[in-house]
Length: 89
Image (cartoon, rainbow, N blue to C red; front, side, top):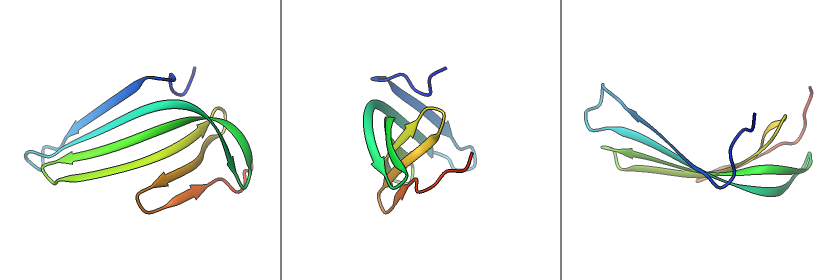
C-alpha cells in the first residue's frame, strides 16, 4: 500500500462542536521529490499541507517529505525546519 498517490489532492475537514462556526480544513497535495538531509538522500513523497481554521481566521502551511518504509524525512513550516539526522530501526 502506498502512503500517498502522486498528483492527487486530499481534503480532510473537522467541525468542532464546542466552537460554533469553527471548521478545520486540511488540504494535502503530493509530488515526487529527491531530498537530501544530514542522514542521507531519499526518494520521497513531497506533501504540501494547508490548514485553514474558519471562525478564527487562522492559516498554516507546511511542506513535508516522506520516504516509504521510513516515514518523515524533512518538514518545513511557517517557523521551523525539521530534518532526519539519525535512524535506529
